[in-house]
Amino acid sequence: MADRLVTQDQINKAAWAVCDTFRGVVDAADYKNYVLTMLFLKYISDVWSDHYQGYKAQYGDAPELIEAMMAKENFVLPPQSSFGFLYEHRHEPKNGERIDKALHAIEDANGTKLRDVFQDISFNSNKLGDEDQKNDTLRFLLEDFARDELDLRPSRVGALDVIGGAYEYLISRFASEAGKSAGEFYTPAEVSTLMSHLVEPKEGDQICDPTCGSGSLLMKCGRRILEETGKRTYELYGQEAIGSTWALAKMNMFLHGETNHKIEWGDTIRNPKLQDGNGNLLHFDVVVANPPFSLDKWGIGSAEKDPHKRFWRGLPPKTKGDYAFISHMVETLKPDTGRMAVVVPHGVLFRGSSEGKIRQALIEGNLLDAVIGLPEKLFFGTGIPAAILIFKHNKPDSSVLFIDASREYVDGKNQNKLGEAQITKIIETYRARGTLDKYAYRASVEEIAENDFNLNIPRYVDTFEEEEEIDLVAVRKERKALNAEMAELEAQMDAYLKELGYGA
Image 1 (cartoon, rainbow, N blue to C red):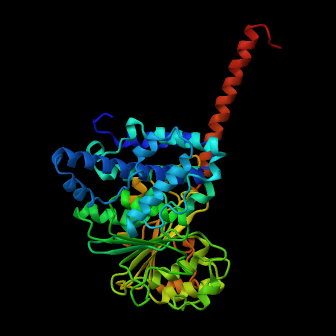
Image 2: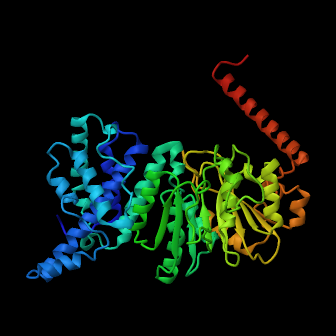
Image 3: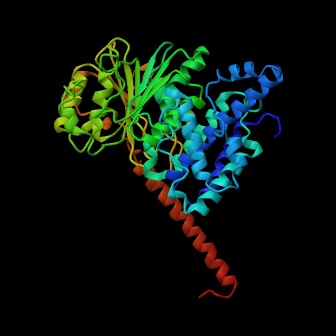
């Protein structure tokens, strides 16, 4: 393979082209797991091979030293588990069984680091067809990843961010194809960027996403600190309920070099796993999330006897779990530095009954800092507009800032986007914390109370555009001028017709 450096765009295109092997054979929601897992295996295999060759060139006459150096690698690669081994045997039967054995051997060899990461993915699954079809499909997959463009050796690729970027690129493309299920594993990049700015992550912060999906939003917050300080002086925590998505998050972390993370698998409401040694919930400086909208059967039975007392402000309705996630997030904020951003459907802003009581308690507790309305069709799997709620401890005053950013976006055929200008405007408006005509309004807690703690944005931000007054005298004058011009044209037409012999 060539040793020339490869670009991010070349890797992205080559990785996306791999998906052609599965199209028409496996649903996009399923084949993303095969492609992303194989990308991870290819990367750690290429790193292992690259480092081994380097040590061999340096310590060729000392195999024990080479072995000792390889034992310090980030990932241990057992014999017959490398991509190269699988590729060499691709023409033999049982490709699926061979790949599964390789993945499980890698899990076992890497202890807690990769424990259970590959348990929800089987390359030997009947989803890939009968044995012959499956074997051919996986042979094609191995050959696709053996292409020169996907030679991912560090000496060729350069920065690890390139691999992480390719992984992120694939996840975003899968999300655009996956329809409704996409919201389970991916928050649009521009929304993640916006939220990471709004919570202002700082050096030393502990950052959590309790419904982390593939981990993109969580890592975006860490990346802001890395860009500002040049150091990974932060800790990332997350929990994800869906096993295959949790595995994506774990691989995503490693491919972005985020080794200082703790991502748990389980239901955050029914079984919160981010706890200290005494069984108490961990608390964080920053909490961000894009939870499932209005989740039915979210776990009200567990909430009624919650040992962590997260729902003391009230129990959300059993068919809408929005305030269950909000309550959990608020209760995991550090009392001095805690701040959070959460994506919610607009019903959260105004629905009454138990949700209204929880909303009132959060406002009266001076925790709500801002309500930001977003454009429609931003999120995969739903066309409805959403909002971002910002909560903070130790607010300087009791006001709440309302921003209506719903009308400013980059129009797309199936999916709208927030452009850089729109994101910048939201961030600057939030930080300025003042009223901006037809865009933002800073409301006092008394005003909100007068509205029965209804947070519907149009109650606070007046976006009504008055119609321009019509000058009837000017309109009448213009009409007369047009009539005179028409009469002149009619006279000219009559004259032309007479010249041509058509006159009366």
